[in-house]
Image 1 (tube, rainbow, N blue to C red):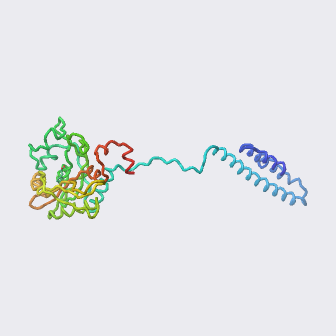
Image 2: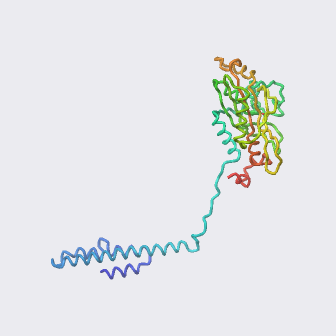
Image 3: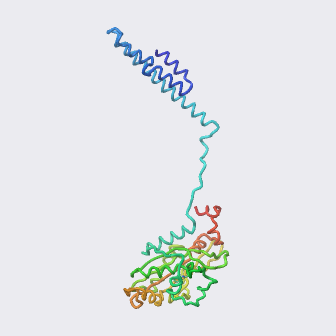
Amino acid sequence: IQSQALELIAAASDERSLDDARVSVLGKKGSLSLAGAAIKDVPKEEKAAFGQSLNAARTAITSALEEKQIALQEIADRAALAGIDPTLPGRSLPTGALHPLTQIRDEAIQILRRMGFALADGPEIEDEYHCFDALNTPADHPARNEKDTFYFNSGKLLRTHTSSVQIRTMETAAPPIRIIAPGSAYRRDEIDATHLSVFNQLEGLYVDTDVTLPDLKGTLEYFFREMFGTSTEVRFRPHFFPFTEPSFEIDVKLQIKGQAPRWIEVAGCGMVDPAVFESINATRKDNALCPESVTGFAFGMGLDRLAMIRWAIKDIRLLIENDTRFLSQFA
Ligand code: PHE
């Protein structure tokens, strides 16, 4: 039985014939199983020897089956790999990465969150009250012109800055208020290398009972040094905004790759004009934003601009074209 079985196994040329061989020997009606059943007819004194030889045969057959199984598997593997070199490096798939604007925005948020600013937001489709009136911007101010602002027939408009979120926040929150609001803003600008009609700002507002100009300067100086390096020079240049008094534009002295160091404008800011508190306080019943009891500072920066400075990007349009040759540089 054993030598017959071993022959069968050796002759098996694939998994299937090996399986047939296994069944014909070890199966319920296989030769070895039948021989096992025949032990009852063997004379008593020979039973032990008979059993032993059956066991030996079973062991030999089982290990022959296993060996053959492995050998067949190897042959199958080699066939599957025919023409393939398993030592070649794998093909790498393109990996995604965050857009440079997203990277800058997240970084700015992180720095400001560490200083206790919480995220806030407001609608991009705004009304004149939140975008201009409540921000102390008179009806004849040039920013309100139809030439500069996208108006809907309904009288609504696309917000020209994120400063409207200052108003939205102060309408309901109570001091201390410390918020930042990243978001889109819209202006009817001619599109060129430095202007888009949709761009990205980050607004900040801090209102409490004793917020001072040094708080404003310290906060923003710290922010831009975190952003551009701890030794970065930051300067506050007097400016005008209807909703802050005094107002400043902030410049940082930077050396962009391949250029001489120079002052670059990065943000607008100022102490919240009491007229803004007044108009909001008039809409609240709790007198919580009475200009006699609170002061504050606000700032707004262009995130596209920060990204362009950080990576020496010469054309703002690259930021919205989604050209992978550009984007893959930020992976
Ligand atoms: N809203 C101003 C702008 O878009 C920036 C700014 C925000 C200035 C807050 C002062 C305070 O140019």
